[in-house]
Amino acid sequence: MYWPNHADGEIRRELRFGDRLVRCFVNRPPSVDAVFREAVAANPDGDALVWDGGRLSYAGLTESVDRIAANLAALGVGQGDRVALLVGNCPEFVQGAMAALRLGAIAVPVTIREQGEGLRYILGNCGARVLLFEAELAPRLPPLAELPDLEHVFCIGGAELGAQPFEVLLRERSDRPAPAEVREEDTAVILYTSGTTGRPKGAMLTHFNIVHSLMHLEQCLGLRSGERTVLAVPASHVTGLVAIILAMVRVAGCTVLMRQFDAREFNRLAEQERMSYGLLVPAMYNLCLMRADFAEHDLSHWRIGAFGGAPMPEATIRRMHEVLPDVELVNAYGATETTSPTTVMPAGAIGEHADTVGCVVPCGDVRIMDEEGREVRPGEAGEVWIGGPMVVPGYWNNAEATESGFRAGYWCSGDIGSLDELGYLRVFDRKKDMINRGGYKVFSAEVENVLAHHPGVAECAVVAHPDPVLGEKVHAFVTRSDQPVTEEDIRAWCAERLADYQVPDFVTLLDESLPRNPNGKVIKRDLRERAVKDAEK
Image (cartoon, rainbow, N blue to C red; front, side, top):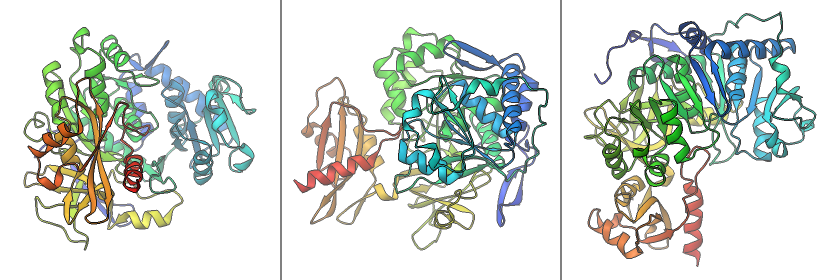
């Protein structure tokens, strides 16, 4: 209904992960490594990776992957072994991850923002046998003696902790192993969630999950052979790994690696490398609009401007259309547990459906459920439950979290949303972020969307403020733009556009940016804690 016909678009239902009956693409690659090998065959001389000071073709990338896989195999590393990567946006991340997958091992990307205790838990929980890490991150690593499963450690860019240099993995060997024969439901990648509600959970992304997400991205975004993109989000996050790096592999395209996001540098690279597909969080688009001048660059190759991770303020959408009218803005909604996209905005639909996150991907299934486990009517709000071939089977070594997070083959997202009669999904809030103001439900996204239109607001976030009478009140944190604004201005602006119970009771004006995690999402937990402290004064 929403998506164009595709050469690999035939769908049937299959029984998967025990008792899940899910819609699947009939014609699909059997593994992530098979996707990679198809790209090498299709575009051997084309750019696979570009980074500051380097460029690697698909033929060159597969050569390095073969060498790393052969040297790891010589150490006894094979199917099911966990290969952890504490590596930023650099070629060694892609080489190491693809080598692990070629062996049938499991890649475990870890954010370079993680600290000692978190690293100890993650490496211990997954039982990593191999660790690749960057030399500058060595001080964060726990004593290796505390990780009994860890046998082989390789350092990129130096010699730290007695680790072998990464270069030894690139040595030529005559005994190269054949690509492993993996099963579709074998785990390919373990991605640890941010752990905002306790210990991080390792979502098990199978080959089956990832392949379907890549096919969804290709079909729903209209990705073409040889696309070019700039990776400005962390490679260790599901967006960076699946929706950018592996999505480019699916279409034999090129990923330009940025070590860290900078608006001016992003624009320069987008022009220089003829970027055709961009995927950023909304805050990055805002920074590009505020701190860099799109008009100074030739961005005529840019066709697709995807975004996710947070709602895009309608004001930002309008500004993007004014500055780059030929870029198709496309919202996408998903999570680590859904191997990236669950919904995508159909081409040309964002104008009429800007308050939604698009339609469910071809093989996906979304249900809106009430607290009693009953599906609600179209347009009514409830918890978003997500099913389909892209939904992970559970969490690594954490049966309790798997049992509590999944129901009847659906992942219970914790998001509050609604599906309209046309199939568009609205996501109002996280369950824990919804504000109950004296019995009235206030969805923070609705208030934030109104605030974002104010010319004095650069960015904003709304959280609950404890109140002894009403239970909770509305507290807005606002980062000011270069135009003057007062708390009274903010309240008056909202009063003209929102119901009285939605108008912020408290407004905190900031000169600094909102707190964000490595993936660009606002850390509302920090803001809630600040609101609690304010309430205690």
